Length: 241
Ligand code: SF4
Image 1 (cartoon, rainbow, N blue to C red):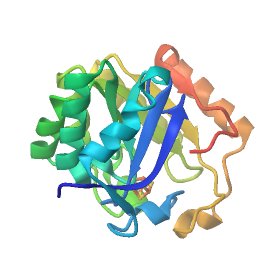
Image 2: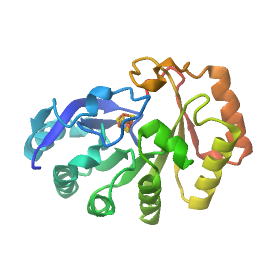
Image 3: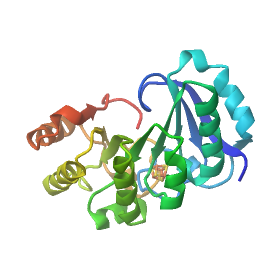
């Protein structure tokens, strides 16, 4: 694959890595989350195709206003070859930082290739418990855990992202598992806790109620009591996931 298949480009974002960033939402995903807010990004089709050169030129026109570029999705690592070429070119010719927002379901070979050109990773962890993860995404979490550990090994895990879904992955045990896993990683990372909201959801979880602000605040308290206060990034409660 030589071209990038891009669902949309957001020129300026403050929630997709450090500083003001241009975000490329690439088409295609290898999970099928029951709460996906962007189901149109899942199929590997129906997106505009851009050469690496065209994408690079688009970024260059905006380079003075951004700290860097984040590749998101869908699952951007499915397009690892053109993405790697784009990041390599950015590294070679600009001072912009390169970040990847991934669901973690990326094989070692692709991850190894991308690590050399990527400054940091935001990785979704849908659940620490294998069965819960499978219920949410349709697949187990072994590869996600491996990807997280690999990013940590290279000191490139910028942020873990966890969507709190009431009654699915927000029990006391789920939170304890999450806290223990992060302590075990022993990494310098942020933890972004995102309250589930059901607007725009088309999957099975559509019928679940959105998380309330009270529920969210209670969970924050629990996570603080588990020793994670310093690394938690709160999500603006009305912010889009
Ligand atoms: S990983 Fe993200 S884009 Fe893919 S199905 Fe899940 S929520 Fe949707």
